[in-house]
Length: 492
Image 1 (tube, rainbow, N blue to C red):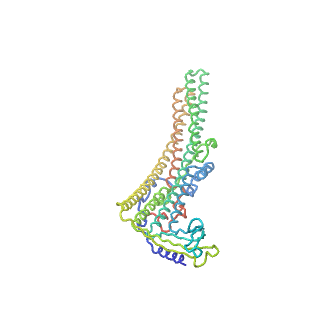
Image 2: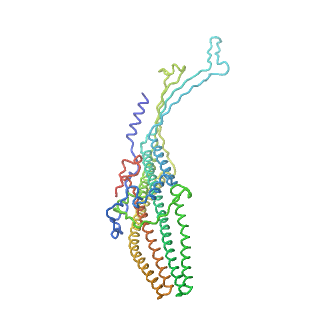
């Protein structure tokens, strides 16, 4: 009965408790009305490129899709962040345990004696008292509780939940970073394949040119110098072709590591770059605050530090603890539960340090400074995010313009090679003119390939800058604070 009374008292004390320290309100952050670069950037129609989770599906590459899906399963960096998240969730449960009483049960048996040897005898001889060894059985239940009157533990739980969400956002950011790195390496590898194909086609063209010079030489219309010059030009491209494999192998090895494999376990077949670059609609600037896991992590870190201010403020108030004990002590064990053997106790204690040399004000000041640091980090993260999106939008716009101009240059260079080679056959120009035009064509084709590579890499970077297919709604609900409106990702 008394234990039930203690529990009722404890519940009443808990319900009457308050929470000291500031409640969290999401600070404002600089958000532009529109993207500066969006006006000059054409969005694809229809919007099949809208990201819906597996953002890399926009490239319509089955091999890339297969590789990307291995990242979340096998990538060791992702596994590291996943383990950190599980640890953070466990710390939430650990903090929540402080809200409840500690209940225990003690059982024991004691054998004791009132004196040594044969016991104790009184002075009256046969009429004296003598006691031998005694056995005592004990069964007791206990409860101890420090009610959270000032909200210190609840603030610790709030901080731990926010920390778990920081860890969840960090995990999402690690996944996105690994996925984007893999896609970048993949397109760089494909660029090497495209370069290989370009150089192979150039070698074939130069072999045909060499055959023309040999035919001209055999006909006696040119000197041997033209043949030697043509051979030298051909071997130069052959040597360049042989060196392409170095970078390709490195990209392939990097992709193997990203997917959790050793380099010998992955072999990517030859395939050139796709001819088109998908366009990713960036959406409104305000939605960026909901779609980037690093912004979510920075925002959650603010609530984590804000709650710790309350923890520091709660240290000003006394610590109150309640205890209760009830049970039975007696002998023999068969009669242990008789009313005469019942024992109980209730207790309460309070403690408050009187002098600590300014420790608590310093702790509160440190907590507030750490929160201010988290606010600055959040706002800087937001600013950096908008910069990155603008950078990639600008890159895509400029690269698209460059691609159009470069395609025109390639077409013009190809016509120049055809005309000059025909004139050489007719004997109206020297062979150095042919070489000049051929080298210009190769240079323009390599530049066009580089532009295409840059456009694909920039599209990956834009998707990463936009947060991929992630949103704040992907934060784990098991750790979501129901009273925190910021978790909905609403723009301030």
